[in-house]
Image (cartoon, rainbow over all chains, first blue to last red; front, side, top):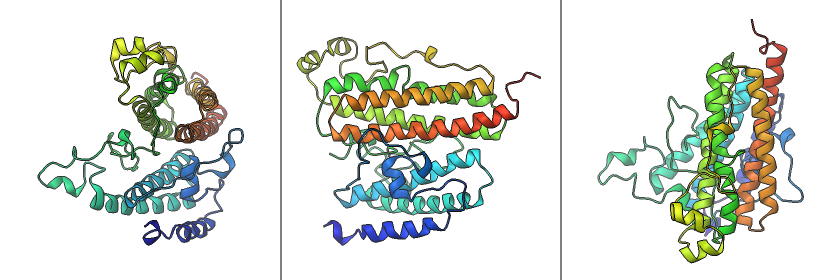
Amino acid sequence: MMNDYIDYYGYINNLNQMNNQVQNSPKSFTEPYTGFIRGNMFDKLYSNYKNYKIQELNPSNEKEYAKMLLQMYAFAAHDLGLYLDVYPNDTNAIKQRYEYVRMYNEALRQYETNYGPITKSSALLDKTPWAWDSKKWPWEGMK
Amino acid sequence: MAMGGDEIMWKYEKSLQYPINIKKRDLKLAKIIVTQYGGSQGELGAALRYLNQRYTMPDEKGKALLTDIGTEELNHVEMISSMLYQLTKDATPEEMKRAGLESHYAEHNNALYPTDANGVPFTITYISTTGDPVADLMEDMAAEQKARAVYENLIDLTDDPDVIGPLLWLRQREIVHFSLFKELYEEYLKKGYNQKK
């Protein structure tokens, strides 16, 4: 069951609190989950289309949840990275981005341990049989 | 695609940037969404535009931003391709024909091929590089706005939430990229990077 392993809202609240500490930045960033599902880490830049609502991602099992965490932290780090390309002296954003990189690395380690290699540097690729071609490809979807 | 941030080259990762899980086959939808793969405002053109323009940017900011956004566009190529693959998977020749895709089937069977919504193949003439960073960034801003408009057109043409979700998400990326290009454009204009020495 989902509830056995996801304290989802507790997790989001923690992120919100953490994010409140970096509001000195010229841009205000949202927390990774909100940023990821809407495709935009910057509060000031977000603009919706007509009445369409941002779609929640509802992982239906542990594997999908682990993949979502991986994508979420990669996205948060990437979007702050784009901002830093233009504003390279924003120390708060640099710290915040690196925190997301650390979380990404942990999410990557967990995913690869349980579900197979994402990257070519995965430790799983030190074993026979060759595991790179043994799982579903990203474009095949979860369904 | 790699998003880890420590790239010294391009690395493939077995993960999309945002999930694509389409449950319902829809060939007519595939026929129009393909334009964001190989059309004039599509993601393939975007990637090639930025990755070609970056070499003649005048400072580190431009080189970094065009490298990183150009790389992200390759992720978007894979997202759009995944949508096309899932929307057309296991379609029979009869079904392709009913959706007006018999000419695609004749040329490509069920394989992917970058075209616009009218079946016109991708061409590199969709992009431009001028060596003038201000002119190039202005093109990039326009490209992001036009891609946003096409995503909105596509959203108007479907009611499948599995498709609308990723289209809304990709539309939002156009908005973020536009804004960052615009900020750099204004900085470059102030610095007079459009004046020949």
